[in-house]
Image 1 (cartoon, rainbow, N blue to C red):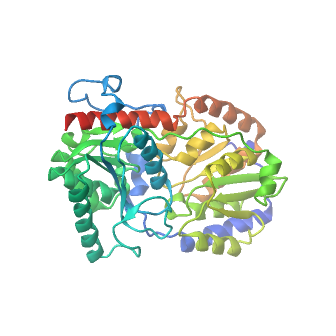
Image 2: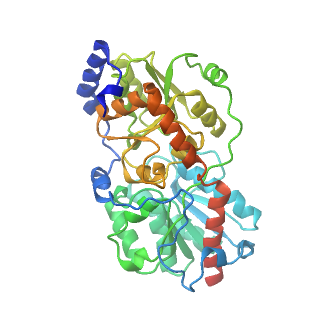
Image 3: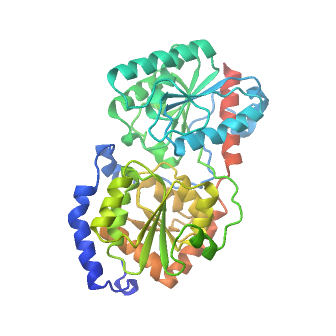
Length: 444
C-alpha cells in the first residue's frame, strides 16, 4: 500500500484496531469453513480471467455442436425438470432456482422444486421439503434419500438438477441408476465441499452419471482440475446473471428510509451474515478506520456474534444492521453508500458483486480466485481494490483508500464502468441453461 494515500488513523482508532485483533479470533467462528479454503488462492493463482458473459464449454459437445446450434427451447415443452436443493434456507441458491423456474415454465416445462430438509431461515416460495428442519443426523439422511428416490419414481422427471453438493450426489445416483438425466451445478470451489461428498461426486462424474456439470465461473471450473478426464469433459461454465435494475432512489432519500446518517462515508456489505462472508473481520477492520460507518444488508446465523463484537469494540453508533433486504433495496443502497466491500473467504460468482459492478460502485473485494476473475479487466488490471480476507489490517487499508482517496476513487469508478457493460443478464443466463437442458432432453 502507498502510505502517502492513506489518511492518518487517530490514536483511538489504533486502540480499537488493536482490540479488534485481540478479540477477533475468539469471535471468528470456524464451523462450516472447510480447511482447504486457505489454499484456494495459492492453488488457483493462474486461473485465466474471462468475461462475466462467458458461457464456455471446456470440451466439444458430443455431436460437435455449439450453443448456437443447440436444440431450440421447444424441446422443453412438456418436459419435467426437477430442481433438488439440500435445504430451503433463503439465499443465493433459492434465488438461482426461482430465476430459472418461471422461465422454464413459460416454455411449457413442469418444474417442481424439492429440498431434502427444511432450512432454519425457510424460503417461503413453493418448495417441497422431504424432511422437517433441525439439521441432518444419520437417520434423517437415510429418510431424505429414501423420500427423494420415491419422488423420482413417482414423478419420473426428465432432468434432475442438483444445486448443492449433497443434492448433486443424489441427482447423480438417480442418473447412474437410469431413473433420469442428472445435471450437477457447482456454485463454489471444489475444495469447499465436504470431502466425502466431493469423493462421491467425483466417482459419479467419472462413471458418467451426469449429463452435464455446470460451474458458475472459470475459477470454480479450475478447482476441478485434478478430477479425472471423464469428469472434466462434462464441465461447462455458465456465469450468473442479474435482473434488470430499477431506477435507483436518491442518495439522501435512501439513507433516510433506512435510518442511516445523511452525511458521512458509508461502507456497504451485502449478503448473509455467515462465516464464509467474513463479516466479523470486516467489523474488526472498521475499528481502525476513523470517519467510516458500516452498513450490513443481510441476515444469517452469526448475527448475534456480530452484534456482540460491535458492542465489545464500542462501534454501536458506526455499524448498522438492516437485516434481509429486497433487490431494489440493494440497488438503492449501492447508490447511497460510498464503498462496497466483500471480503469473503471464498465465492463462486457473487450476485452481490455483480450488482455492485453494474451500479459502478467503488469496490473492495477479497483476493480469492472467483473474486479476482469477476473484477479483472481485459487488460489484466483490476477494477477493485483487493484485500487479504485473513487480515483485518489489509481489509482496513483497502477500505480506507477506497473511501478517502479521491483520485483512486475516480480511477476505480472509471474502470468499473468498463466492467458494468459486460455484466450478464438473467435472460442471457437462462438462454444458456435452456440450451443445455434442451440438448440433454433431445439426447434422452
